[in-house]
Amino acid sequence: MRALGLVLAVLALVLAVTALPHGPDGPEDGRDRTVTETDRDPSPTPATSEPAATEPAATQSAGAASGDGPRWRTERVLPPDGMLVAYYGAPRTPALGVLGETSPERAFRRLRRAAAPFESPGHPVREVFELIVTIADAHPGKDGDYSHDVRKRDVRRYVDAARRLGVLLVLDLQPGRSDFLKVAKRWRWALLQPHVGLALDPEWRMGRHQVPGRTIGRVGAREVNRTSRWLSRLVVRHDLPEKAFVLHQFRSSMLPGISRIVSRPGLRMIQHVDGFGNRRQKLATYRAVARPKQFAMGFKLFYDEDVNRMGAAAVRKIRPRVRFVSYQ
Image (cartoon, rainbow, N blue to C red; front, side, top):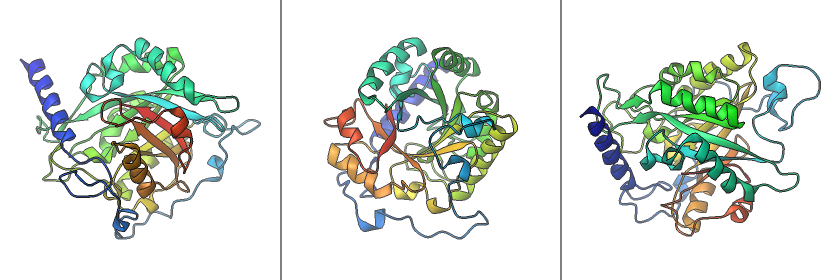
């Protein structure tokens, strides 16, 4: 009965999400996804003690540094002049993304076929599994935080498979009413692995009285910076390779104060733009929120929701340049 209840809850949440507008800020009925001037910059928020966002000297070059040094300086997560291409989803949950439709091994074979058109001489591709490990719920649960963690043994299966297959693994967090840092610390055991990075999804970061699937969430720069600082220290102290640190976004309101998000040693900061729709709508969303001087840029392709889905050639023509593309 518990398993049946979980399946019904996931399906109810997926149905609720598809009813929400998934483009730039606009009317809540989702009929108009055109971008207005107010979408282009988040509203001012109170200043914090965090310094202005800058690119640390250690991460200014996408290529590996020559000579000896910490692994986070010499082993870069993003190939020079290349791309990351990902499959996105949750274990055993096809409704949440293509990655959960099959085993990690079969997903890898499909991912390689999807990634191949993005690769060309001098422009290598690195495959990625982006795995949702904390899933937002439409109900509070025992702890009242409107989310639950995927079973550890299911996540370990992907950690082990990704290592064996030579794939990067990015753990995606949908924390509900919990704090991103609190949730990230529960996955420390996996993040200590050299091939495992982290993604924060503000759509599912709820306020005190908000419920996933009924509203689109948000997270401030201070919470993002606390989480990235913790992960950066983990990388540096344990001499790990550079990790992907991904921020999902399709509305400016999801990341208020985004200019105050700080780059960290050992982390490759990526802003991943997730809007769906036709090509014009997706590009309008992308250009409304993209901050290429602050982040490497990401772009999502939806197998079911996109209309006339873009191929590799169209994605490569997008400006600002896309460095991380994922399929859901």
